[in-house]
Length: 206
Image 1: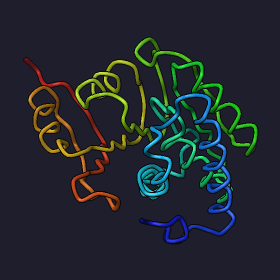
Image 2: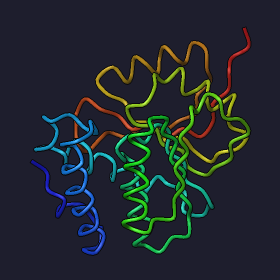
Image 3: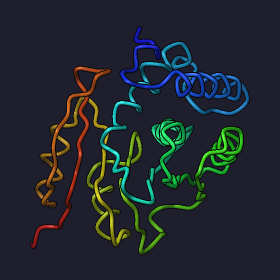
Image 4: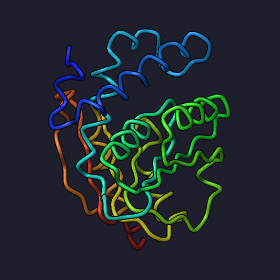
């Protein structure tokens, strides 16, 4: 199993905060469903390291970082903790429509004094969103995320997607409707998974 201590170039202070967050997550998971019970023993590799690997793709020159469907905090909370300890003045915006999970995110935000805002709304109902980097992990199918970026955002720098075993096929399917400009990265936690760094999405003319 991968260990947090093996996260490359991550300061000890950041690792310590992430470990503390992990403890809070597992403790709260006994009361509310934040992650699968089976994932508690593999949370480092399956969720934390998987989330942290996209940190270098986040545009640190922007004022906002947005995470769609943050859930229990992956990748949003991990990225926000890493930004905090690097003293990056970027505000993290978490969209999570579940009030139980939003309450948990609020607790973590206050505990670690993160520069963040939790928005308990359905992202499909939001309009004229502006941000720098946008992440989405275990959120919606890629074609729905493309729809959100095209209709609900007026400005963003890049979109970072986590894709599983059927990732390549899902991109091919979405490409029938959308022109997607992206770079592909192999996930460090699974040979079957991909990270897409998308710069531009445009609906094809029918």
